[in-house]
Image (cartoon, rainbow over all chains, first blue to last red; front, side):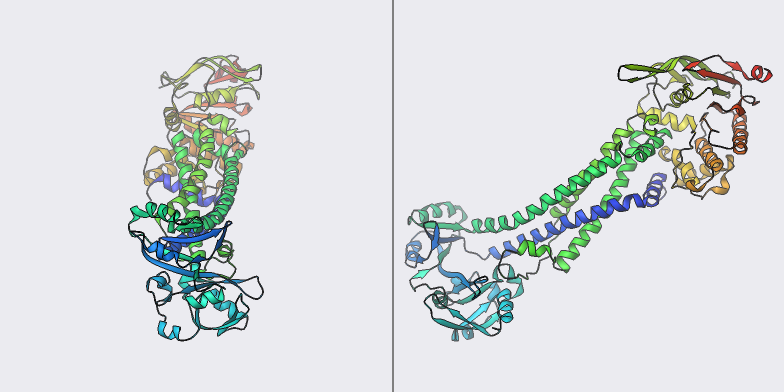
Length: 392
Length: 237
């Protein structure tokens, strides 16, 4: 390749006319950086979600009255246990506890620590917790966001909850949950199930919902039908429903960015198209002259294709590398707030580096195809006209 | 060699349509140019000499009639063949030199050789030889944009010669040169004639009226060849 006059001329043209390319590379870099950052963040969140939801139960039974969720009577558990194919039936207690300002809230989760199945979902985030010690007093495990919030409000060691019945309940902060669990546990407070019922104003006969598993995937539909007819105000939520709900939340945010990206990309492509079409006569003269000097249409297209590909590859490598650094090393400041905002406590999750070929090739195609087309179509249109006309 | 016909132009017409109006630029041109001949197309601006030259070079297509070069009609050749024809057979020198200002003299000269599939060494050898022939080898590494008009013209000549074409076509070659540089250009043209190149010059410059190596001066007027005047007759008058 080094001994090829074509590639020699290509590099000459590219570097000697670098001023012409710098602007295009700079705009491309910004577009690619934004696009890659958005895709990196959303894929990283999706990965974390999948990892987290892996631990979730297959089904959750809730109760609705007048469209609102209400507590579920604990005796429904017995009914569920009678259905063939169901395992690990676990009543769960959780709900939001509003801090005194009423602006911020925690998710209080009650766990039956005596039942191994009941805290299976939380096993990964509670791995190193000494349960014996934890159950000795009225203790709580809190997410990182809760811990930070309590410290900022001068409650570094614990918090006194005000129950709906007007009683105060002092709970000691036993441990902060690991950072890796922040995507779901950032604003979470884990307490024994009885304590959660007290804080949330539930009786001992009430729970928030009942979770269970159906090991045979083929039975999911049957089980769902059976349980739905079990009680008129009963609602069944599957693991897939939860997954979809989370994905919709993050996809909608990513979607806004993709629309913005598309608008920017269309504008950029139009500028490029204009640049290489009749509006800019220097490009026309350039192409016409090459044709006059014996270059065929294919030779001209080949030169412009490689020239454009050099711009595309340069901008792509730099844009993706910068986005990777921004998202996975710097933690995507500003953008993460947009993606993870909406939860009431500041979330400091670590974005897990995910680089799959699908994402990288999508970024390349979304960017390169319109870019190369915007250059080559007008170049081809000029190249097929008579050189004399193009040189005018 | 003089007796071999290099270019035959038969019943050539060129017209442009602008709305309903039809503008006839070339009208029924018939001309034969022998190999090794140097002919001058003379005429005022708009007489059609540049268009005729462009059609001979394969840069433009006639509306009717045909151009045969070495017996082959170039008027309807497909792109790949006409490009090959331009690269191999034609050396074109333009009025405004048409150099790539950001490239050096040597880089400009190499452009016609790039699609030829030669190695870099072969290209460099041909470029150096051509620059030497055009007497501009001392400016090999100078950027074209920084050269004087005369130097640019010599780089354009080197570029036209680099493929060793049989035909050299010059469009108003001295229009942007002072008298000294015009005479230098004519001197190089004389050398090319001695090398056996077929030369066609489109000009209105009187310097070309009495050159010893010009075999014919063909006046053009309003898109037509007025008459073919042998150079010795013109010089005598």
